[in-house]
Amino acid sequence: MRVYKKEFERLKNARSIVRSRFPQLGVNKKQEITRLLYEISKKDAAPPLSIIPDLDSNDFNKAKRLLLKRRYPCAHLANEISRPYLPKIKLDPSAILDLKKTRFYPKRIFVERSALRSRLANRFRDAFPEAESLEIKSLKDYLRKNRTFKIAYYNKRRDTVFITEENHDFFKTCPCTKKAVRCGYHIFNLSFGCIFECTFCYLQEYANSPGLVFPANINRFFKAFPSYKRPRMRIGTGEFSDSLMLDHITEYSLEIVDFFKKHKDVFFEFKTKSTNIDNLLKIGHAGNIVIAWSLNPQVIIDGNESFTPSLKERIEAARRATEAGYKVAFHFDPVMYFKGWQKEYEKVIGLLFSAIKPKDIAWISIGTLRFNPRVKPVIEQRFPANKLLDEELLPGFDNKLRYPGRIRQKIYDAMLEMLSRHSKNLRVYLCMEDASMWDKFTSASGGCKPLPLVLGRDNIL
Image (cartoon, rainbow, N blue to C red; front, side, top):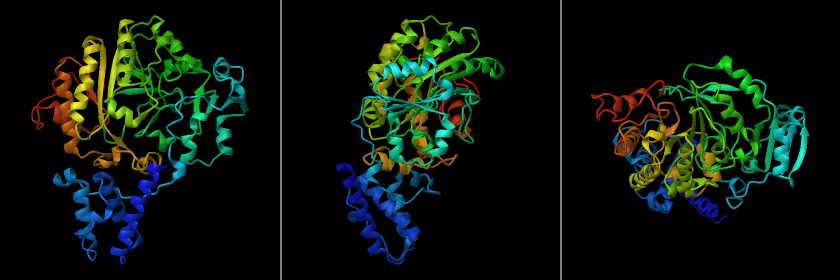
């Protein structure tokens, strides 16, 4: 609560200053000046009052321009502040996430009537004997009767598990952002919700379920797959949950690997931050299974990826996977921009290639921090001490909040150069970027050198 009090006091001071200095402004204009004052104060660790002296209280447009210039200096230089996102700030102590509850142990296990005798329901009951097991007609019926959903409820989602039977929502193409170049990925839509707490996770605004959802009838997915299958497709879990976080209970991986032995022309990817790979290490596979880890500097993991294994633990798990014959993949997504970011990512890449041989890497993705604007106020409420929102994030080509184009290009240029030092034959793709950004790295006339690695625009295989 100390953090909340500090930020609440900062916001209170900003509002007080705006009321006294700009009494003639309407509600919306006061809201915009207040947010800019608050964000600059937080970013620069300066009292709001020290930011205001040079502002002309009789000229709103001039005051706003000066504040925007200070809040977004890089974007200002590149003339990229056409549509700043300046919503009302709301800080609520009931929405702050308690990061002390590190152990995952649900209090309630809801089981759909049709899944009561399923193997998965029994495994969850056995794994968490102290949890209350309750029968429900269906998840849809439960949600209809429990429509209210608040941030505080999302914070408690780890207390509740739903065991369901999925009947139609088996696969989908990657919900790639509008106007971005597609990578040809497909989603095996297995489970929803995550036991990890990442500051930047889009699920905290997207999710409408007050718990974690696990389908008990994975066999229905397998029966539906032949009619969905595409030649040489890349498909995987991990879009709406972590693929392996509870694999010791679900044992999904055992059935998935066994099934995809029959589809050797398909690459299946387990996306994870977990090190829960024991099931995968003890079974044989056909060479078309890829285990992929999300990587970030340890300083980012410590501050933004709560309850997850360390960087070294993830890379060690990847090394063990390659020893068992698996191809591995890595997602530098999202790459965070902060003071000293390049040196920190150089450490990550150095550590990665000290343990993993380039020949064992199936692909690597790079994507910079981005999220729906609606996620920003949720992050502010759940993680009031966060640092990631202090950087320059403005609506981009798809209206998601992103770093300015100049910063993103700088990040990609540096990351690709770092990777190329270790191998010129890595398969790399940019995640959710538009064609103009790709062109900067794939054409000699793009303003910087052509991409030194193997990169595919529509499908990396």
